[in-house]
Amino acid sequence: MLDPWIIEQIRRREEEQRRYRDEQPSLEVPADNPPEPAPPGTYGNKDEPERGVAILNY
Image (cartoon, rainbow, N blue to C red):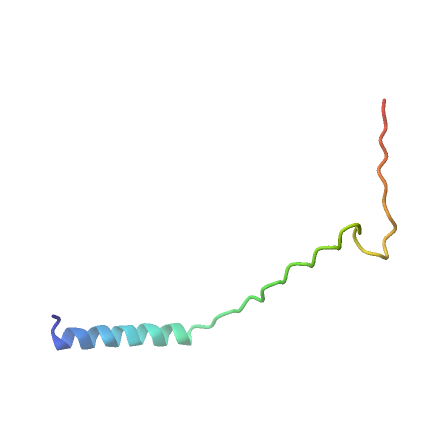
């Protein structure tokens, strides 16, 4: 078993560390929600014209 003065010293040190962490400025980064997937059979935005594919053979 540890001596009482050692236990008290450990408690003080933990308290100082906690106080130091609480006083430090912090920046919260907002979490971006992932975009909702498009329903099957649709492509992109409704305002955009449909795009096609051109295959060229040389």
